[in-house]
Image (cartoon, rainbow, N blue to C red):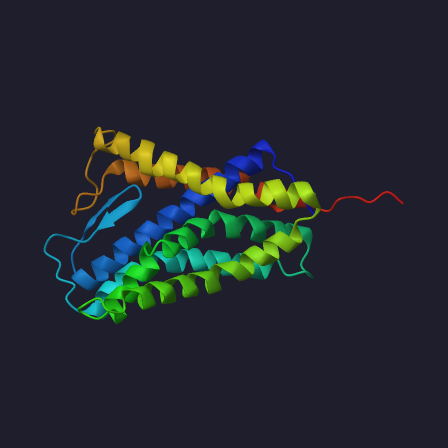
Length: 240
C-alpha cells in the first residue's frame, strides 16, 4: 500500500494526535483526583495533583503515572489489530493512523533516556531507597515500552510498500507528529494559557476554560472529517 494524505486526512490525523494527547493528560488528572480525593490542575502537556494531596503509597503514585500511557497503548494496540492482513484497506488505514497518532516514538525515546511516565511508575514501585538498582529499573521501563510499541510499528512498516513509503513516509509519521505536538501543545498553547487567554477557571483546582475549548474543537473537527482516515493507505494498482 502507498500512503496518500489529502488535506482532510492531514487535518484529521493531527486532530487525532492532539485528542489522544488530551485524553492522556486527562487520564493522569482523573487518576490523581481519584487517589487524592480532590481536584488538581491541568494545563497543556502537563497535570498536577491538588496541593492537599498526599499520595503516600507507592501504588497510588504509580497508578497516577501509568494512567496516561495506558491511553496511548490502548490506541496503539487497537491500531495493531486493525492492521491485520485480512482486514480491508479502510480498517488498515485507520489502524495505521491510530498507531502513529498515539506518538510511540516519544515514548520510546523518553524511556531510552531513562524518563517517561512508565519509568517513573517503575521507580515508584521497584527502585530501592538508595537507588542502587536505578539502571535496572530504567532498563525494565525501556523493555516494557519497546514490547508495547514495536509490534505495531513493525506491522505498519510492513504494510507500507515502496522505498518512498518506507524511507520517507514511515519516518515522517514516526517523528513529525511528535515535533508538531511539542511545538503547538507544549509551546504555543501553554504560552497562550499563561497569557490569560480564555482564563476563566472551570474546575476548582484551577483548570481553565481554554483547555476545554481546545478539546471540544478537536473533537468536533475530528468527527466531521474522520472518514478521511480510511483512505490514508490505498492499494497501488499494478499494470499487467
